[in-house]
Image (tube, rainbow, N blue to C red; front, side):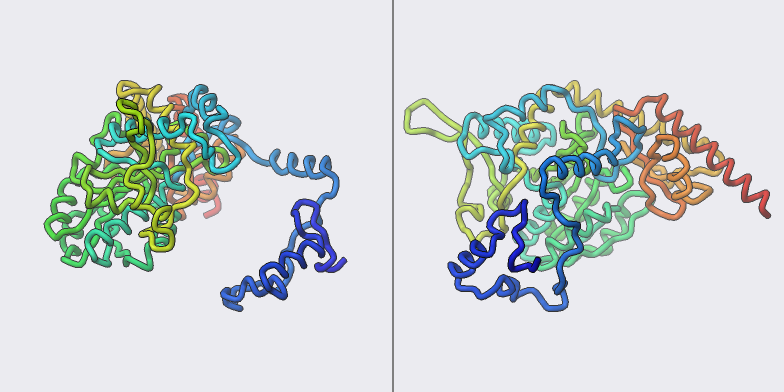
Length: 462
């Protein structure tokens, strides 16, 4: 069967007559014309190597079930994996609320009719603003990576400058995404870190009057909490640069929010706030700023606030400063804003309203305590060392006496995911409130046994 006569059972309008009618309507001879702007070197010029489609629905369902059965969730295995997606507890009421028909649809999790959605998102923004000690928080963007990238491009527009300093250890995936997003506007320059956190002296040396932003990650890619943010901010502000902080909001019930230490724009992901891991995570990005029109008007994403109605004394909820967005300016917009992650904002709002200030403070204390206990338990193993002495929240790295891949393979066979390999002998370990003391002890015991056995085998082979 040729491609011209093939009708795909899953894809509408693949019948030859339908294809011909669509090509005729747009004045094209073939679909190749649609890809004229794609360089020839990037084209595959052959069919994709895909299996034949299942014609019968029951056969397709069986095949998909077989694929899904290969997955193992963190409810089935003891997991110390982090690096951007975290195993926090999600209260049952969160799922109940976001499953309601006035919030949930098949498209973007946000119906176009407002049956309380705008108010729920306004409440989410208000709760996030209180947690972060900021004034203005946006409706969620796609994810925290985009949010941080947007924070940096905002700084470029505000200052008219083209350099941005990266002064923290950043997750490689995040660094790649941010670089890809901002490369047409800003040049990223890396300032080496010291002891797991920012080297303030190196930052001061790198600053000049052409720096648009200083980008700080706290906790960093290794979970290190930045202790010198105020010094960094003072130095950046002295040359007119904007301080952009990428963070995870889960710890700010107990940690000092970046806004109180000089941050101008605070960004990050809300996955930790009531969103499941879901084999890659539900993600939504937040951008938080002070109530400064110069900054607020550079935010490309939607903001919901109180709005007056035609009836005196009544109010509703709707877009604030709508003329900032690409919805209003279209191709002339400062940044493109499209399908967002508004449903996850409602989920995070429900989570924060349930936790309250006391709950978030207790959670922060638990995370700090569990992290420190895990560090001490692993560092007590012969040959295992902590990579720095910074304060860590949730994640930290250790150097092992044997290859990290060997440890992962051995412990995975015991139903334990010990962490993410970040170097030949380095492992990134993550704990949350769902990681008990017994879980940490089990990891330490298994790690100690594997390292001792491997080192003994090496000694015997000498």
